[in-house]
Each structure stands twice: as C-alpha cells, then as structure tokens.
Image 1 (cartoon, rainbow, N blue to C red):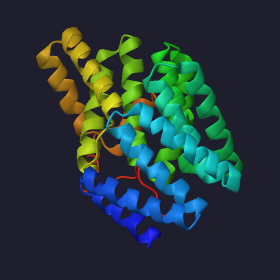
Image 2: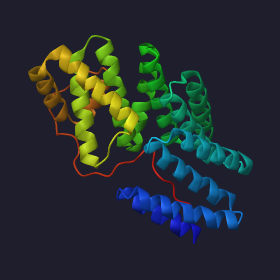
Image 3: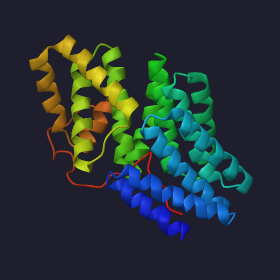
Length: 269
C-alpha cells in the first residue's frame, strides 16, 4: 500500500498536482512508519524533500533530506545516501553556503563513482560546476562540465544537460562571449520546451538574470537573433557549443516531444 501511494504521488507530481502529491506521499510515509519500513520511509521522505525544495521551503527540505540521509546510512543504501547528499548540497548552494555545498556534492559523486551510478555522477558534477560558476572559478567549472555533459549525452539525461548548458552560458558571458551565451540559452529553452520540463526556481532566476544582462550587452535585436540561432541547433551542435567544439552545418533541430529525465524527480520504491 505504501508503495502504491508513493507511486500515485509520483503520478500527481508529473501532472503538476503538487498538493495531491504531498497528500499521497504523507499517506505513504504514515504507513511506512507504522510498518517500520525504513527503506520506504527514506524514499518517501526524499520525495517530500524534493517537493519542499521546489516550493522554496529550504528549511523543510533540509530537515527531510537529513532524515533521509540518516535512514539510508543506517541501511547501508549507498544509492539513496548519494542522492540525499546531493540534495543537501542543493539546499546549501541556494543559500550561498558554497563550502558546505561543495563538500556534500563531492561526497555524492564519490559514492556514485563507487556504485557506478552515472546519472548521479552527472548530477553531482553539474552541481559542482554551478558552485564553481557562482564563485567565479570558471576554469574549474568548465572541467566539471567537460566530464558531466558527455555523460548526460550517453545516458540520455536531457534535463541535467539543459541545466549544465544554462550554467555554461553564464561562463560564456563572463568570458566576454555574449553571442555564444545567448545561443546556448536559446538551446536550453528549446530543449526544455521539447521535454515539457523547467528549471527549478533558483536556476530559473539565474537564467532570467543572464538573459537580462545579455539584453543590455547585445541589444534586443541581436539577443533575439542569437537566441533564435540557438533554438534551431541540433542536440550535438548545442553540446559542441557548450564544450567549445566547432559547430557543423545546421542539422536537425533539438528533439521534440521526448520525455525528461529529471535530476530532481520523485523516486519509486
């Protein structure tokens, strides 16, 4: 019953019914606690944490992630532990506690390497890149994206790839290349629209700030031209732009109507 309620919560989440998802997750958690099902508790608490984080309740998210972490460590479940560490890093990062965030992400990526979790490796590396960008360490940030973005391509995780591109656009702007930054942001928007996905609120705010800054630097007309050029790049061309590979002649545009593989997505039991 707990499993079914958790999975129904995932369905509600996917439909955008966050209130319904919360109710179903809480019912699932009540049953898991009654049965002393620690694994089920860890998974549902993590899902509730993601929900709190996405709604801007960072204090609540941290409390839920910490409980998830304690349970997963007690169980010796390295997959859930790595995920909880990454999520705790997210909370620290959005609160500008970069030293703590970096340490948590590094622990997460180390565990993911140990167990061969490529998705977890990519997510944690993208997040380490975000920390480096926020701190102005562009060379270090690039090194994280040079490893993480090809992994995203390999495993088909387009949402994490889009998140990485968004951060690389900030690097390009900081390096004095506003046209390329705008192109990459156009590719980000096209890929997200194709998946029916979105950045979380903190990353969306950074995306919008970068677009606003580029508008001042390029002017409205040039920004829209670069943005439009980015929107028609193929997946490989956009990845090449992010990794500073030469662009080939125009190929097929970014894929339409494909499902997202989310970095912050609910977990099934």
